[in-house]
Image: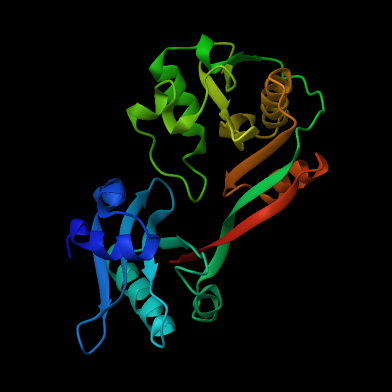
Length: 266
């Protein structure tokens, strides 16, 4: 099935207008739909490529007596067609218990951590400097930093428009980029003010710097800028962070307020 044919089902699953989900369908390479014997749609998924983790399954299944069976059929059909797949097992879209019993494994999670804006000063490691993203307008350097996320499950290939000011609703004056001593983008932490609270994505850090203090230093730099703007509360969103990353963030007295497991097959 063409991914664009999935739009009516996606609109029903996500409770949105089809036009608002066109970007999602266009990002998919293949589409699958589950029907009952009356040709009624039980669920639909599209396969959205992920650089190092196969394809994300977007979509899901509708409530009803055939929900579990439809979910398994869709996951298995997609896996047979494209190979390794993963999905965000939000309860209203996919039944996580059934999928785990069928052999999918938990490979990560989406989490939102919330709390007071932390204060814990951390210097960046030698050989790096931290700058407001607004001070580094070069799109290639920004893209280099944004690509540090791409090997983490739940992330996708970065497109050129992600480097623009305001992309994703983030504020380039609050966001911070890390450069190495050759001027390459080796880390980034994007932030914004949303509803009077800070909103930020957990930092992306190049693999060669993950053993250093760079991630913690990026968080500190962004939190410092949020405090200077008068912000006292913050929400931090992460996809596929490691247990060590989570353990660090919990030491900042941030608590997990939302969590969705990422389940994979293949």
